Image (cartoon, rainbow, N blue to C red; front, side):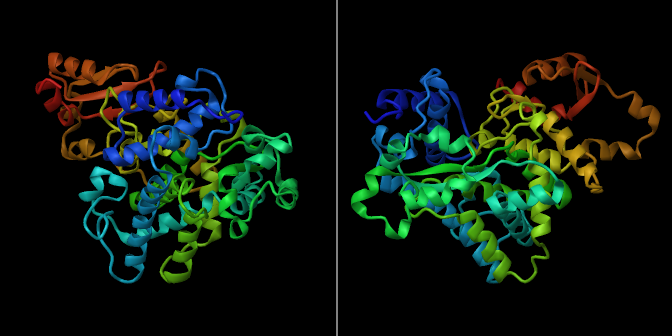
Length: 435
């Protein structure tokens, strides 16, 4: 067993546990592909079955092999998901756009159910793909630091020769977390970083696609990027940003390694004359997504798995909740990301950041309240509001509504601040149906 690579049986057990305990807002075959990648991070961090044992050189290829899957097949399946997003953009630019986020054959991108029904403006989705595809680029992050006088960590993935890495006394943990910007050329000359064009097939077994940090600093929140873009522009731009982040995740295990989210962004910039965005807009989104050092433990940064993970109490994913917030709909105050942070904290963080750059955001009024505008004040005051804490389960809140004939659920924190509003009519059908 190579040094610092997770044992086969632990990988198998952790994968089984994830599949048993979690459901993602997608179809099972794509859920599998996402879970496989999650095991890599869990092995690095000693989470789940790895039980605080850190296997920092574990790669996705180790995961796939341990699960008895074909590396070639899995890489191909992941690339197909990326290609479908590319094809959507290419069709739009070629003046053959679709008004839904679906493939040519009508399958929803990334297997996300609502993409089959949700109508989108392709122009806005292209804008989001451009913004999202560039904001993670190391050079963009570096320039954002100068533009906004902040510190952002950045780096990128490289083909790394594991044998050379061990000879140099390094491991995946050191490459991912130490300052390496001034050593990149040295790593290339020493053979640690491999030039793919010169990579021989016989050397493949010693090569892995690994993240090397250039500059140490706090990172960005994919959640914040999605929400901020939605509030500045609209929900379709936010969906484009989300799709770009998904490409960034999927491209880490494919047959030919390259920066595909950036490639798509540059393709849109070059081929789509109506983009009406530039690098300054990318710096702005990069700034809004950047997490200040003092808030590293307070602001969630959800991976693709956590964005799509369905909350067991509410039956809703983080992805869906973000869309509700952007569109001004009532949202459920769930705990998100591996940090289990209340989602309203993220929304407060984004809205405060928007104020710092004088962005005027027109918040949409939830449909629940729009109908009240034509009612008399007295009538509205007579409405029956049920107040609950964020920790209250949805089932308990609905039972409270049923018992008291309530019409709205107001979610308040311990200080009396309103975190959100839930319209029980959207969910009572499940309670009455025995769900």
